[in-house]
Length: 249
Image (cartoon, rainbow, N blue to C red; front, side, top):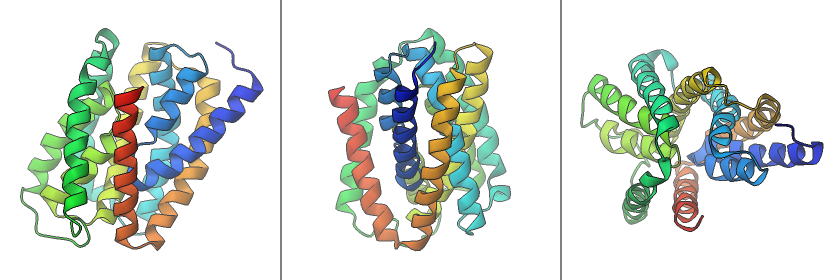
């Protein structure tokens, strides 16, 4: 499928905005996936191409967070491994399953996250003791959230961030940084499955990937410079936008 230059330009702008938003609070897919569908790309090809372009953004954000000292990838290898397994399974299953059946459940879960975060203003403002061993946490949630991201995707960043804050006691900055590494893992593994299935549109995905790099670098750098309260507000806005997108479109 060929796209004209004007369409590619708008996809580039959409991915730049998405990379900026996603690197701060997740939710970039609520911008890029509708943009791909609006360009006339069939759903499964849009999902596959979305994984290609988002891999650029999540990698850029993860590496920038590591460079800025907000997370250490070597300490998260267990989470990366089980996220990889979960995402590969989810991306395989989704090709034979109508993902829209999950939407009502995901909306409810995101609403709970939004309300809980809004009503607990001190949540994630500073580190707290963990409630579950790190290895067990990364095994369970790597499989579960990795599968979900490979299978469907919207809200993945919110689920990772809130899980890291509530169960491992991270502040929102550290949780956001770790989330990007796990997002990249599930993105790249899902992408490999979609490439094997021949569903990726390379030109659109690479053009959008360039936009993702710019947006993700700017967003992750901003998180480093801002207070945790800024990340919290941005997280609430993006979670609300994801809920609205799933309910109305």
